[in-house]
Image (cartoon, rainbow, N blue to C red):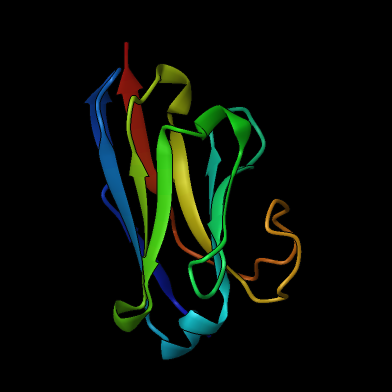
Length: 124
């Protein structure tokens, strides 16, 4: 069982930046694509960004393109999400997850290891 631990969330004003980290307990993380999802109060969990095992492929939902950047350091078993130009609608709990089924990056189904989440709050 791989354990994922997110950190870096917090409260920021609109237009500000945050940098999320997701550290894995298992060295096998480098073999999986990794994703970030978020869930706002009263809403379903939604895809935010994903990165291929090598880091060569990155994928984003339209609402965060050009503002968020996903990256990974396989030597450190860590995945990052740099979030710039934050908006109040980005407020949510952010989760990282491992795409263990090596399936569709944009759907939560292929992700079977999840972190506990970190709260991001953007004030207007």
